Length: 153
Image (cartoon, rainbow, N blue to C red; front, side, top):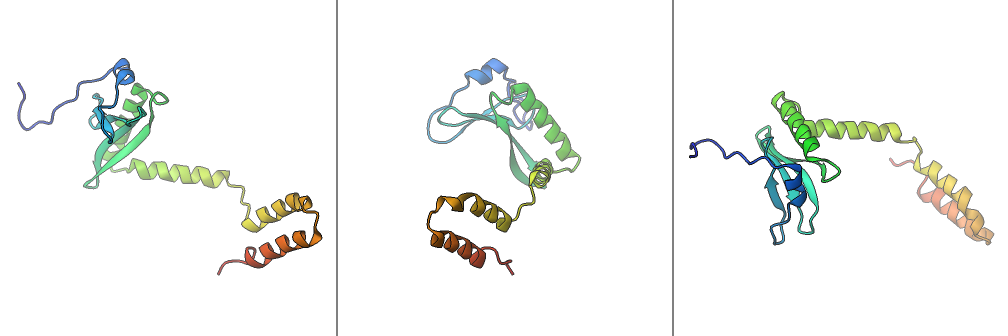
């Protein structure tokens, strides 16, 4: 007997259930509730690809967070990530903004600080020898120096 007023609780799926899950047919994605963590779903594409999605609300808006694909991210890992994300949301932290900031910081740390003009000059030095015609070498270098190297204002 179901008590009214409470949302239904999804049956907890096991690793074998997740592995055997298939698309229900049609063109859209199949969203299979996983259980164990409220709002955690296994999204199945029509071609059989599987990804983990957490549906939740942040600041009064419904959002979907992805946690990666199955089997790279296991059921246990997806549940752990979902619990962690829900905990952060309850503390007022936006886990999506936090993840994007971490990606930006990593990208900034891995950039070599190479400008376009420096990269183009390195390219020209390496590739212009392939042109036997002196005029073509001059035209390539002059065109880039004239159009691409000046600072943008």
